[in-house]
Amino acid sequence: MEKIMKNNRFLKIFLIITLLVLLIHTSYSIANIGENEKAIDFSLKDLKGKNYKLSDFKGKVILLNFWATWCPPCRYEMPLLDKLYKEHKNKGFEIVAVSLDSNPKNVNDYLKNNPVSFTILSDREGKVGYTYQIVAIPTSFLIDKNFIIRKIYLGILSEKDIKKELEKWLKK
Image (tube, rainbow, N blue to C red; front, side, top):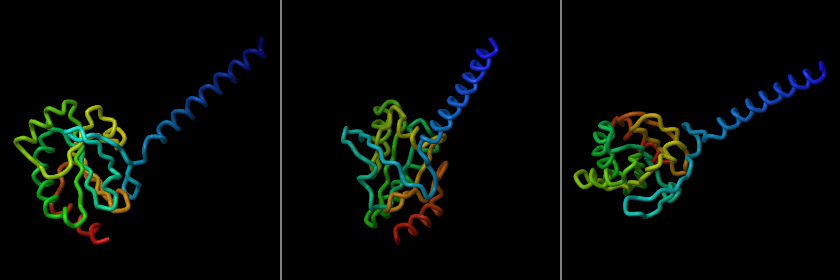
C-alpha cells in the first residue's frame, strides 16, 4: 500500500510539472512582439475583399496601425495618419491600418465620410490583433525596410515624434 501511495505522489508531481512546462511553453509560443523584433507576417482582406500580406510592403517603412471606428482616439488620429501618408508615400512609406471592428459595414460607413489614402484591412475576428498583443487602441508599430519593429506607439501618435522617427528610418 505504501508503494502505491509513493507512486501516486510521484504521478501527481509528474503531472503538475508537465502542466507547468506546457503552460510556460504556450506563453512563450505566443509571438514575441517588441521593438527590435521581426514583424510577424499576416494575411487579411481589405474592405473590397482583396487579400494583402504585411510582407507585401517589405522594403518600405511601414506604420502598422490597429484601430476601430468605435474608438474616439482612433477616429481623431485618422486625419493625421492620412496627412503623414500623403507627405511620405513617395519616399517609401506605407500605412497599413487594421480595423478591429467586428462589422466591416461600420468601417465602410466611417470611410465614406472620412476617406483615407492608405490601406485599410479588416481583422473582424481579432486574430491579428491577438497576434500583435493589442491591449489598447490605437496602437501603432513602426516597421523598418527590413521588417523589424523599430517603435511601438500606444495611444494617439504625436505628429512631431512620428515624423522624427519616420525620417530617421526612411533615410536608412
